[in-house]
Image (tube, one colour):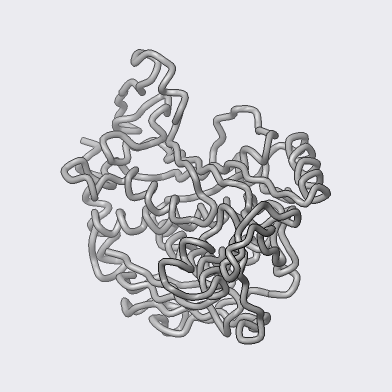
Length: 372
């Protein structure tokens, strides 16, 4: 139902996106969109680029009087640092980056590769996700993310609600709900900075208010967990995705792995545990969606690793340009948007309609039927 495409380079004139398939009748608050962009720019460990840019998006299509029309939505963000034509070419690819494979695949210089593979492209994905969050919110579905690990520092295991996450991360420099853990995370980032190194980590995204039945078991491309995994793995630096109890399920018996089923007139069918992370058989099961993504350390290091000069073929140190030390806090904001896009797509797939009013009618009828 939904489809979007982004364009633009990290140091080009602009970043832009077109989102097609969005229904009419939703108030698209520009302040909310820009607030999400500001969240993406924050986080301890970010680099100098965030001090230059004051990211703000302009809605250039699909909206009249702040309300969506059903036409494709257009978003435009102008870069302040638009020096791409003056920037030098690079010849020493960074290990762990798209530099080498991209330059060889497209038969061009490293500069063009890094300008497009840069995480700055996620500005547009955050904006697209923000629009999807507003759509889901109109139907009582809320999304929140938080950081659970940076380097060796991990948040003690907790089963948090959306309210817990939103309250806990307020004022946090690393988008973590625990101040003691946050302090240790900041210390780890500072250690990496002093050593000319970088750090990865893990974040969790939770979605509440989802009805049973988004996604499908009938064909592999329609499985919701598969769609979410694909979208999340498209995020820069992503290396692993897990749902619910995730990798822990490999080491326990089935009797302790699955969520028993209950029923009440007030709640309908429900589960008391959520080891599945809200998805069974490729479909939402009524529990909160819980998904975690692992991000590798950033490939650009102030103390570069060994590489090869692509002109001379001689061994040299990799190139270094301005970079973050740790982008996991920003990654958690991006992850929220990626999850929102996939959920909004599945929601529209299930309940259809060209307008919010039509979708609401379909949704109410479905909820009445499944509650019996």
